[in-house]
Length: 164
Length: 164
Image (cartoon, rainbow over all chains, first blue to last red; front, side, top):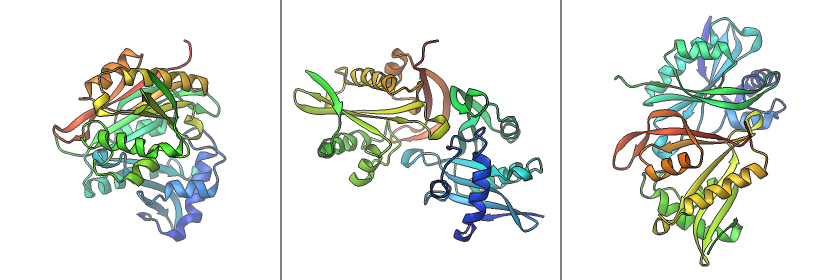
């Protein structure tokens, strides 16, 4: 059984466990693989950010954040980021959180969702977002210093949340 | 005579004067046109940001910031933002600051420069950056709520700072 809910302060340990495991490999997120717990939680639980957790059989196995991608005159477009515990990959958690996130973004009145930095070699993520209606809007050349592959591209991806 | 130098804390009044005049019209930057002085200076003078000023005949008429566009594994790409006092437009200040900024970015070892949000209707800016070697990497649909034109596109622009 999978359930997704908003995070509470008491979930910090679980969030840090997942965040740390995901960024340690240096192949999907820009965060310093040695980022401190405090810096990680300050980012993931920032006051302008909504944080959600995915629970599977009582264990927290994923987390995502949802926030305006820009302040003020750009705040009608959402941004989101997703992390799945490495041992829980391939079980559809990314898709389940993605669908939940799109629903929340619509509910909150966002007109679109933008990902600023999808690492081009992160095939499962690129495939998932394309499958969920996101388009690659642009390719940023060599902007990610991949821990194994060196400088690789990242994509800006976008999908509308208003009916055409 | 135009000179460009790093900002000092004592320059806050001049920076706020320019920032306020530029964002008030709501046609080029995402900042809330009614942003407070404190919030504006907190952004423009953030600790991760270098701030520069352009002085013309002893008067501060422009300012720009230079910083990493991403943390950690994306910190080799620079981001920058430029503001010219409305009464000093059309005198080449944007270009002068842009050239100074590219020089500083190279000196600091950045491998490229990225603008995340160039409002598509801001023709002088789009023309200037193209002229200075930036390419439009992608078009973000309707992401800017223009004070007069409603939802308009913004561009992601990029230029490399390493020799091919």
